[in-house]
Image (cartoon, rainbow, N blue to C red; front, side, top):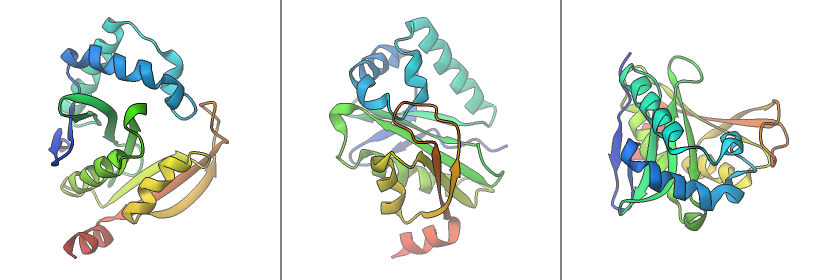
Length: 187
């Protein structure tokens, strides 16, 4: 299986795989963003975690990527952690899913949209990938804005278990296929 790209840069942000040296900065970003993330991110319930646990998670993520699996990336602006993102092999074999979270001090600045744009380009540069999905709970209106802005199509609303406090248990699945993305990027 082809590896997904592990570093992307724009004028404003860099997406790159987490390194164990990022543990303190990642922990600090999560710590100040806990209340902001709690309604939507099930993993936040385990926070705070020990530095060794976070370092082991980063090492496992990087090993999974090296084996052709998901890529889990930090979002950095001038070496400052402003969020996290990734491309995941959760759906069909020819589809990658984008996930993202943004540091509370950096919301409403287009960071998630910019990261998702970069990741969509990277996904379609990956051999065999023909679609990109974004999922969010229906109640997460801010997350809905990202796929809407990028031209994704809402293809399903499916009941699912509630896993975080702000959710209502309706998964919104957005999809963008290679052809429409390529046509939109050619303009």
